[in-house]
Amino acid sequence: MKKLLLSATAALTLFSCQKEETTNTTVDTTTHRGCASHAVLERQMQEDPTRASRMQDIEKFTKNAIQNGRLLADGTIEIPVVFNVLYRTTSENTSLTQLQSQIDVLNKDFSATNSDYNTSNNPYASVRSGNVGIKFVLDQVIRKSTTKTSWGTADAMKKSTQGGINPTSPTTKLNIWVCTIGGGILGYAQFPGGSSATDGVVLDSKYTGNTGTATYPFNLGRTATHEVGHWMNLRHIWGDATCGSDLVSDTPVHNAANSGVPAVGHRSTCTGTPLEMYMNYMDYTDDRGMYMFSVGQKSRMKAVFAVGGSRASFR
Ligand code: ARG
Ligand code: ZN
Ligand code: CA
Image (cartoon, rainbow, N blue to C red; front, side):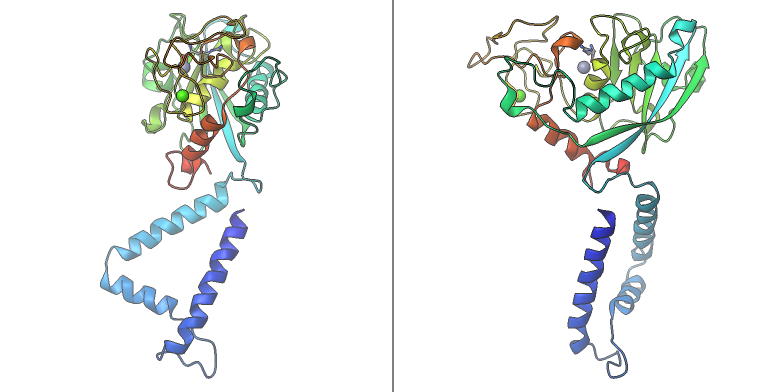
């Protein structure tokens, strides 16, 4: 993909140079082809002292994109995942197998290859997202023992000064902290646009992956699917308000969060009384009751990674 773009740019430059040839009198075109691009750049740099530093920024970005580029040929973005495990008890010291199971669930859910994707009686089958085009790769696991029994939701687990673990390369890697949160919280995420020092997702170890200590009814790894959805700018499907908006046009208005596994045909009492999309990952249903993102949600997630997007540094 990147190579294609580069050669397209090169072709364009060539083309414009050939056109310039006829009008450029400063270059001797009798002995060799002339191109004024570099001369023009030098003139601009003389005229504008900030021009050179912008050129340097572009060079820095280009070098990084080539070295760390994670945009695959088919447009899939590959995201390295760093697990930061904080444990007091041995059961909190989540096994590599359990962490890998979480990566596997994320890859299935984000590529619509989850085994329950084709659950029958889904009134929203036509707006199901197919492959979102985001792939997760286990990058590293960092472990730290602690005396803390629970970590809460004030980001202490992300700060070594508070006994936690600082994130690793948060602008190019998804950091997931695995610890005991407490207070009945399964997990939480930081939306795009926050400080990189606290960027990432937190999962309670009992709701991580689908094996080991994973605990029913949140034992299928969907807490991470939900939280990574937030990390990619998805809102709760009920819009965090009665009949609120999730900023996605193909998801219906919900009264409030659903829990358990709602009955097929469950409707909202909001305007139009639509069937609720309780099988969406961004609702609060049990893990076995959620199995889809919508097409509109996919668009929001991909926009975050687009050139100029808030997480473009992951490309
Ligand atoms: N309650 C959590 C949140 O706030 C996660 C909900 C995840 N749901 C699930 N079935 N695992 O964002
Ligand atoms: Zn949530
Ligand atoms: Ca909506």
